[in-house]
Length: 413
Image (cartoon, rainbow, N blue to C red; front, side):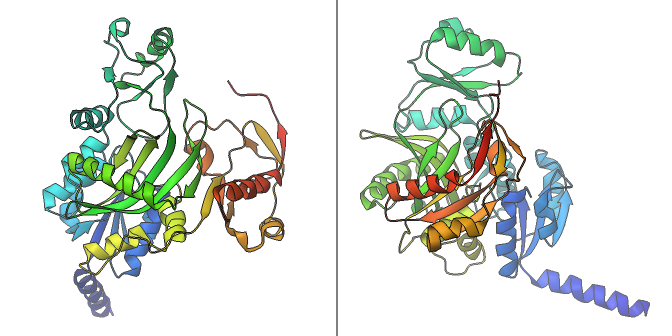
């Protein structure tokens, strides 16, 4: 009987060795879609995360709990695993760990330098400004800075040098407001970047870069909360081919300056009649149910799936043949208690097949506070509608929100 068990274990180990093996660095909720797609393609997935409760760990073939900010610890674990490649997932500051592993083990994908630049807003600005691709003023701010001597056009934005999201962001209209914000910043023991604010409408791109050439899968126009938060509450699938060409021409220069190659790309842009301003970019997929739900529905291209095909040496495609006129909307209620939350059937009765996805996690009696960052809104869920135009989509999504009965409460500080 013992011999039989040993034989079974030997067969399992042999089967794993025969499979391609991929690692995922970071195993939060946003990693689940990519892990599933990799396993569907016969890849043995090993997920690494410092949180033993990370949701993605249970979807992988194997989970390793390790501090992903510790490059050497991660390298040691990867050496034991002996994977064939890394698989990119939505992640913030520690995206650079993936780049480090790619360089160390000579894997395809974004380099350590490219990922470090993408997670350091000041270096990111310096490189693009030097290339004439980010034509604004910016300077570094820390507790030793003399903000009295800083000269920058206003309005301006003060934000953390590292990390992502809307954490500790200040929108400033004057030197006096900068001095006031500095009193908060100097207590936070980290670097900030002060930069001239760009004006225009906000967009994002999802796509990939291969052999140095950018391929845009989808350009998304966004509705965002007022400054300083700038939290997206909706995205529309853009269909204007002229705008795609304009963005592609500009972003091709950006990916060359940032040395992106053989990687996915997600970038946030501000576009006006005269110029395109890149807020930030990263060689990874977008989060918040965009790359895994919205982009495939809008383009019929799943960028996670297509990139895994690339890693496996299979034919792949990142260019949409057709773009659907759809909108993803998040539940941006603020400082209210939910008295009535409509069921999916109620929304379908009003919209019919124009309701594409309904994913509402709001409970009756729940208090919904101020929208200050992604964490404060994404857990509530989202819905996706289709329509004839952007205005039609806005009307439909506003109608959906009107079906909720919300009781206004006191405004949070």
